[in-house]
Each structure stands twice: as structure tokens, then as C-alpha cells.
Amino acid sequence: MSDPIDPANPNGWMQTLKPQGEIQGLPGDRESQLVALKGGGFMLVGSDNFNPGVPGDQPISAITATMPEGLLKAPATPLFPPGQGTWPGGGTGAPYGPTVVDTTYDPVTGQETVQLRVSTWEDPPGWDGTGDKPYNPKTYQTEITVQH
Image 1 (cartoon, rainbow, N blue to C red):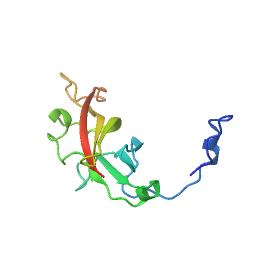
Image 2 (tube, helix red, strand yellow):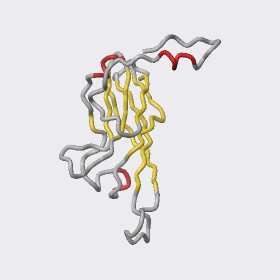
Image 3 (tube, rainbow, N blue to C red):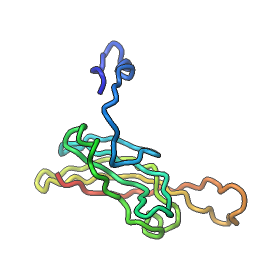
Image 4 (cartoon, rainbow, N blue to C red):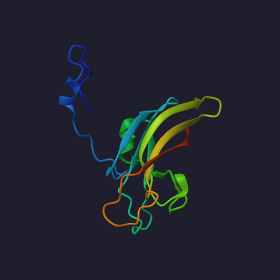
């Protein structure tokens, strides 16, 4: 929570931030984004320092809640199936950096489609595996559906 935004000091609210608790559904190890859903409520997407050696570890998940406070205890929903080959691009690079591009809400069905852009870090063509892995990101768009 914070004080309301003061038009005379639009960045001042940041000095009044107060901790409200820990979001238990997402690890917060990497990129996260909070969005207000057009159909109401909130969604927080986030990525983790994915470890294929940890059973059940997921690279990107999302939590939703009607009120911001509900995000503190909301369970995470994995956004991609576990395992290499099922991720965007079909390669070995785990997706990271989820960015909400847009949402579309259908009031008749109560469904909101959330468009996301994610990145992967694949082995570059011709890299022989020696030395530091060159940064070779790829970006993909995907979408998920939230039922209101």
C-alpha cells in the first residue's frame, strides 16, 4: 500500500510504500508483472530461475485474485507444460520474462484472454558449448485464458 498519487508530486507515493506480506504463490526470483484485468480483479505473472532438477519446478506461472490482497495467498497456475520441447520454440531454453501485451474481455462468456510475450535463451547455431554461452534470446507470443 501507499499514499495516493499527488499530482504536484507524482513520484512521491513511492516514498510511502508499506509492506503488506509475501506473495506465496510465485517465487519472485525473476521478472514479474502485475496487471488489472478488464473483467475485474488482478493477475500477477512471474518467472523463476528454472531448475530442471527440481521436481515440479515451473519456469513461468500466474496468480489471480479479485482484490490485490488475495494475491498474497493465491495458488500459482503454471503457464507452460513442464519439460523441454513443450516450451515456445520447442527448444531447450526455459521461457522467462513474461510481459502482458494486452487483454481482451468477453462479458458474455466471462473469459479474458491475456496475450503474453515471453523470451527463451537458446543455444546459438554453431555454438560448440565451450566458454560462456552467447546471449541469443528469442521472443514468442502466447495467450492464456482467465475465467471470471
